[in-house]
Length: 185
Image 1 (tube, helix red, strand yellow):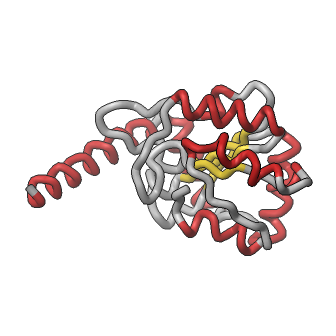
Image 2 (tube, rainbow, N blue to C red):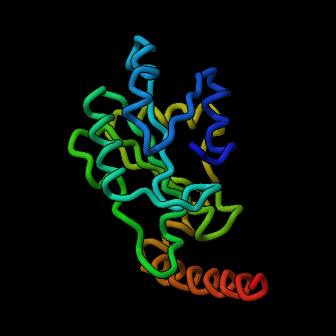
Image 3 (cartoon, rainbow, N blue to C red):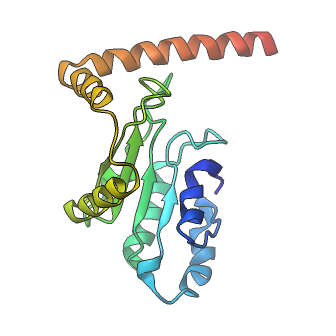
């Protein structure tokens, strides 16, 4: 906590109980998490880079702490890293998923923040079993995304245009930010 309300609404829809835990206070929340007996019904949802609404970036130390905690108590992590590619001065810290040796992190993102808001195509890096299960759920909900949108994303990734596009997006967004800061000053 905090996190963008629309990203956690899915848990409410699934009748899951949400418990807000400050990223820096996992140790104090141990007793809260342990009060729920079934570990399979627990997961940590983390916005590790450019948290919405705070813009915070978790330090490597906090990322390691979250992963260690998750491994110790066998609680999967859902790492939502949707804003990762939109950095200005310094590239953000490596995702928690990059530190994951046990396959406990489900890493998710989307192209809606970098290519276009209407581009409702996301992606996931997780164990094959988790990906298959989520793919089945997705098909039951909406039968997938537009093939045209998927082909656009595929071509951008294949050709290297996505990397160039994100450089341009960062440049334009940084100019807009700087303009706004100048007006505010």
